[in-house]
Amino acid sequence: MNASDDGILSSLRYLFADFLDEQDTAPPFLPLGLPTEAESVVSEGIHLLIDYQGASYAKLYVERLQRFIGRQGVEAAVICDIARLMARRMAYEDAIRIAQLKLAGYRASDGRIRSTEIHRFRMDELVDALPGIAAGPILMVLGKLGSEHRRIAIPFSTVNRWGIRRLKIEAWLRRWRLFSIRYSEERVWVERWLHMIARALAKQPQAVSAVVETATMIQGFGDPYRRGLADWHAIIDGLAKPTFDGDLPLSDLAGAIAQARAAVMPDPRQVALKRAIAQIRARALGAAATDAAAE
Image (cartoon, rainbow, N blue to C red; front, side, top):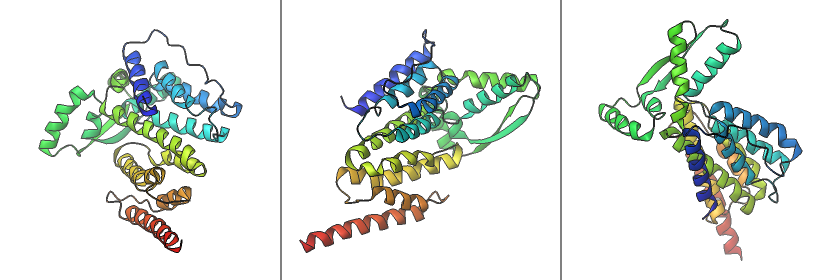
């Protein structure tokens, strides 16, 4: 069984523990061997994820982080960055999270602060928050109607009793979050990101920080989230993975990632990004061919 399989099994184990209303609600301990400099960052991540999804979810975070603690070449600063960015991605923003935060703000003010926020979601994005068994048929119907990309304005309001009740219902849906299509996609992404960090450590240690920081490309929800995800995959598939596989002779992967990220534009066709990646690849392959001919 490889590291990727271990990650999937861990995710599934904690998924079912959370859904079955886990008996052990105590927060996880800090990982063994954690550098002192990273303790506050990891502690914040644990508490964020307990608030977001529960103790089992926070334990999954700790287990994922444990893979890098004590590993040769992994400095405290890198652990801090992985911990901070992984917590942020595991607490991804969706309608459930917005409802959670809105309710928390209302309760913290003892009901004195009342307001309404309106967020626009795509239809398929709202459906993706449902369990796959329910979301699949709905997405199929939306696809046939051509309505999956239709945007709907959703109010998150604490100005009246009905608005607060709606927020409570939406926040309660966190129980189903780990069975949703969106979570399944996020789980796969986090595991791939961690896998790429591990490969950078083994193949090109000087590029580790650049690979870790690619997580900042993916934020929010809606079109910006989807574009960021697509841009991330383009850089990883076009530069990082082939470098690690030995198919692309790129000696400065960190510089290549920085150059590619500088070309990212709010363009779903990724014209500038694809051009930059192609140019980087052509230069690397051309230089390798020249060196081979000179030998």
